[in-house]
Image (cartoon, rainbow, N blue to C red; front, side):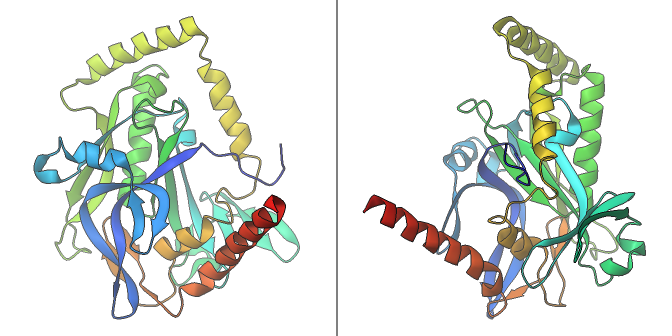
Length: 310
């Protein structure tokens, strides 16, 4: 296994509850009250919707996709949802510091150092609001790919806190059968004084509509028995995932970093509330600095493939 490369669950697409739109030469986050399921392909208009997005909308109310049937890939909640405080370099998009409120892994001139993490409110390096909670949830949608997942990224406290609690609770009440439970991601809303009484949308995790928790646990036990009979080793899968995540200091690959920074860690001072998160707008003049290196690499790869074909 290549050291320094995080081995993460295979990603088939993305799940979001908002998008970036261009306005006055800026990319601004636009609030949404529904999910969008996209592929991993982009065109000039942004991310291309995954076929599952249209499929689920056909059976949704008013075409609004407010719930998605999912299952977890792992029994361990922390493998399905990784949430950390994250600080990115505004110039190149690389992670500077990632911590959990107790310890952090910080990229310094002398290499990676393990240091105390006092949380963003009490960390001198985090002043200015650039260090935020950053959560990544991998879920299974459909049965076409048993190990393929869709990823939901968020810097929203409400989504991270709710998803973390639900995963821990469902693992506990099911007797460690989290990966076998029939679950769904669901859009919820709330208003606070900070949001000036406008709705804030966040993501929750529940058992599927029309199913009680007791029925979901019975189904999970049936699925577990079927898996045991055919030799499906959930314990070994969780252990392999732990080793894979621990294989690198930071989870996000170099190709993913520009998109992560563009979506959650923009540079300008103006703040806009988007769904469950506070995101800063990006001017078009700033945006290319995060994209150039990736574009050049893709072009270089294309040239390399062309050369090898010749």
